[in-house]
Image 1 (tube, rainbow, N blue to C red):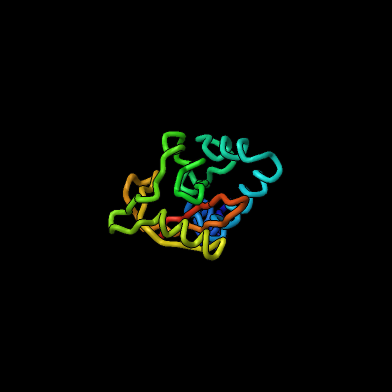
Image 2 (cartoon, rainbow, N blue to C red):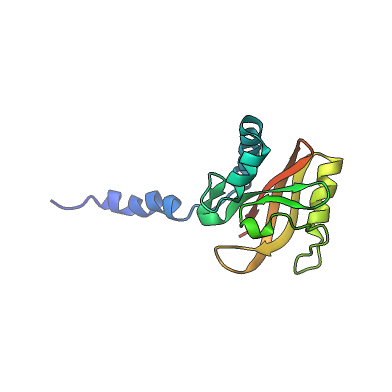
Length: 151
């Protein structure tokens, strides 16, 4: 039996989306909303623990997409890149271009309650500092966020 040439031509088109899926801004926003819903249902402490857990439910795309939570003063309360970040005040943190991205995050949270902001950050998949955009949303005076690396 000979393989169907049309089927062979279509195979790469069918497999490529499965192999090359990358995190999207829509996924980041949905993940933030999911984390807030989890916090509402299970409490802040349970949410912080799950968000910070390396293989928790708020890790996607091999750790490239994750949730973070800050208070309004820039202190990390939960972070998908690990517990070593928790408890650290990052209000003066700067990206490689000098952007005080946590201050931007806090400003957006206080003035708009939600929104997007751009900066550079270490991509856990590549080990490189790359352009990133993050969605943040305030719930119970806390800043929940998640971001995607710009390709």
